[in-house]
Structures are given as C-alpha cells and as structure tokens.
Image (cartoon, rainbow, N blue to C red; front, side):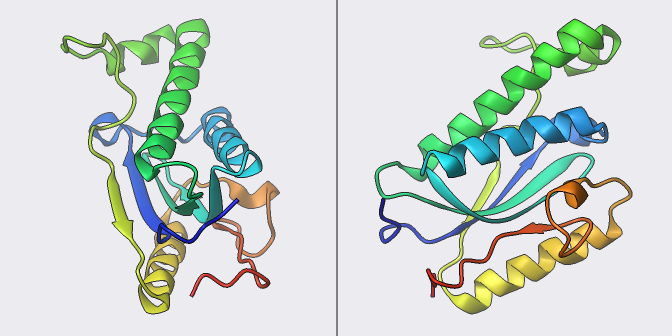
Length: 165
C-alpha cells in the first residue's frame, strides 16, 4: 500500500437536483458502508467526511495501485445502486422523483460530474476540512454521531503516524 503519487482530494457528490434524499439514516448508512469498504480494502485513506441532506463532502486519498477516477466511480456506482434498491423495494413513490430521460439509464441518484479538488498542501487541506466542519454546523440533518464523538456532524480520521504533508 502506497499513498505517494496522489494528493488527498476534496470530493463533493450531490444528489440529483439537490433533492433531500440523504435525510433518512438508512441512506447515510449506505454511504458509510461504501466508504468503510474502500478504506478497509486499502483503496483509499479517508481523512474526513460529512453527509448533508442532499450532498456529501469527503477528504480522501487514493492508494497508488488505483486511479482516483476508479475509486470515485466505484463509490458513486455502489451507493447509487444500493439507494435505488432501497427505493424500489420500500419507497416506490420516492423513486419516481429520480426518473430521468437518458439513453443510458432510467433512474439517476447523483448529479453528473462531482467536484474533485486536489489538496496540494497542508493549508488547502485544513481550509477544506474547516469548510466541511462549518458546513456541518449549518446542517439540519447530519449523521456521523454514532461513529465518532469529535463533533456530532463531522467524521474525521487524522493519522498522526502517517503525516500527509
């Protein structure tokens, strides 16, 4: 496992048309499950994330064995498929709000072209981490409380023995 070729990224994925889909905990759990898989399988180091009602912010760094676009696609595809499965099985009335007129899909969960910004130095990294923290303070519905007690809205992993800058 090596994390030398890629800077950490600030990554934002938004629900289609900014719909408030991520309010229920079950959808937050899908996102957390995907992030946990990516971290445990050494595809990424997850430094922090915040889940808002209609988007997520992540700070993560891709292992050199993977391309950032591959990890991002894996996250987006898995979470979209699991959310669609939950909507089909238990919330068909909500599912219809994600129907799209596209050649390659019937339903769409995430907006296309998520934001990904390389955090090329410590100052930029801390600026984005602070932004996530402030964003979470304004949120009416965030989740990460049961995962860590640093802040009720923000999940942060800082590796003290593996400095990134």
